[in-house]
Image (cartoon, rainbow, N blue to C red; front, side, top):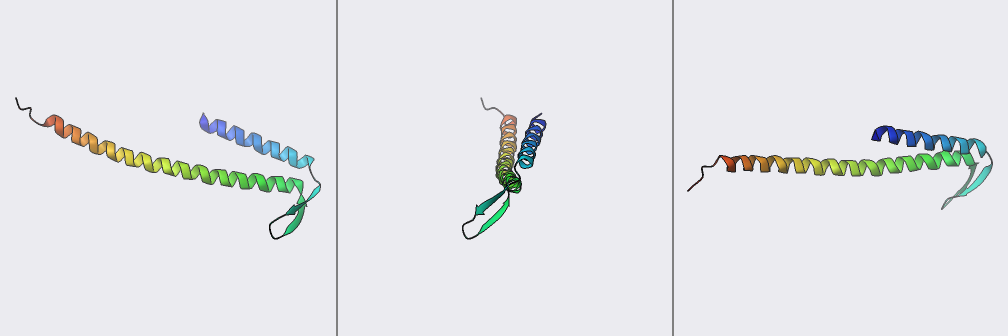
Length: 95
């Protein structure tokens, strides 16, 4: 369900960008730190959308990998503690 929702939002945003791009075909000046160029507003929208998608994907991947590593560490700790608990349960009780 989460995957479907994410995909639906992405498709919706892509459709909005395409519609905005079709409505905005005028040329705009873009000033960089060291240069200047002229491009269509629709192309600028597409480039900014792509950059945002890539950046958010990288950030999402970073947090996903961080959680995967934490999960693996906790699973190892859990396995170690279960083994220790089982050993304690098998010890004879002194009266």
